[in-house]
Image (cartoon, rainbow, N blue to C red):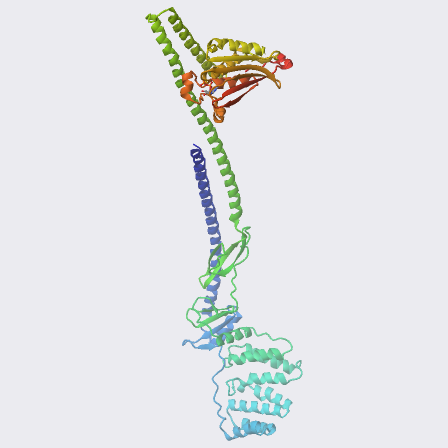
Length: 631
Ligand code: ADP
């Protein structure tokens, strides 16, 4: 029964909890999905902007495709399209920046005049004479390159001979002439700009007008990328040197790009992919190739402008760039089709679902607990009801069985006796009287039974009303004893009655208390074998009047004592039935005694006899006078 109840409570509760849990899980998933969709949409908008940005950069490459390499480089840098760039020719060879131009072979190198000047300068260390020798070469040869190289040698030797002023005059004078503009030295470097830088470095007064115009002229030339002759390494060197020479910084917008391109070309770089921005080595340097592979753009860092105003959401901690495998991102998408391996992600402030989940769990716990409580209470009510119904059914069955059995026996024996008498089957008047006596006894037994049933029935229906009055206990005991004296007056039965004098009055229902004593006396008689010794005592003790019925009968075990006041309980059913009991006597006794505010004790030992003591409280004259008890 208990198992069924527990299962009846637990199974539906578990089902309800499971259902609620699943429903809440689904709801959370739905909310998460909605949020994901909303943020993904936002990210896609940003990604479209990023795509557009890089598409524009790649588009800008087309505008420089017709220009010569250095100019294309310069334009890309100046327009801010890239941090730097490498320009290739149609064969895939770098055309800008290149470290050296192909040097025009020095035609004078093997001539005796040049050998002589070279020997004087380096072997004999006679700069003055070497300067003269170079001057002679410059005047003798008509080729501009040879003349420029000789003038350069002359200025160099004059410097070695400590004739600085004369050296400056050559550097700023003949060497600055337009015809030497594109003359190169043996290493492929332009002689004129190098001479200008040297002159500037030698000039003392940097505020001098000549100095300033010379510097401006050199700076102009260095910024002029249409001047194809100058190798990029020389340009870079001159830009850096000029910046160091000048007291005020000179602006070279392409210098940083030149440096970056040079570093890039020196490094072990992976092949740039057309239209895909990838990282170069470990540093934060990125490159991207044009579709036709003619230009590679370089970027010092990957700057992705994701715009502003994307954070005004209390849930979002940040929207940012992350590697493709960032598991802390709430939602992420590729940042742009031009940037592989980089994602655009939304990071949430904290798990927004944690608090909601906590709230939901609490609600879920409360609902679950209330559900369990409600089901448990309901189950208890049902169990109580079912229990009561079962008890009632059992009681009814017991009652029917007992009544039919108990009525049948005396009725049957009465019928036999009456039939015998009617048919005149008796020997004499004495036997007839004996038969009448037996009929009377059975009748009396029937009456007692029916009395008990009626009392029990009233008791069960709570209809038993007691007619309370001040009673003389002695008189009640005497009346009870009198009514059994005929039955007990036998050779094998001795009845001792002892009623104390001056017993205080009690408040009670006379007939009910007589029923109590009769039932006890009846039991004492029934459950004692031959040589019955039954004692009845009435005495007062501790504000109670005690009515004691004692026998020397079969006695009761401890276990039996606990049960004998239950309805229909009989220790030995066959013995009780034989003796004419129906298992109601003691329950009626207890009911009546309880209703009188008293108690009943049993002292018994198997085979030794039993003593039943009923204790009834004295009358409190004041209270009983005002409100007699009854139920
Ligand atoms: P019954 O009508 O069967 O006697 P009771 O309610 O009067 O029913 O008693 C319940 C049972 O208690 C009896 O069946 C009997 O077994 C036991 N009992 C009652 N009185 C005594 C007694 N004086 N001695 C031994 N057993 C007793």
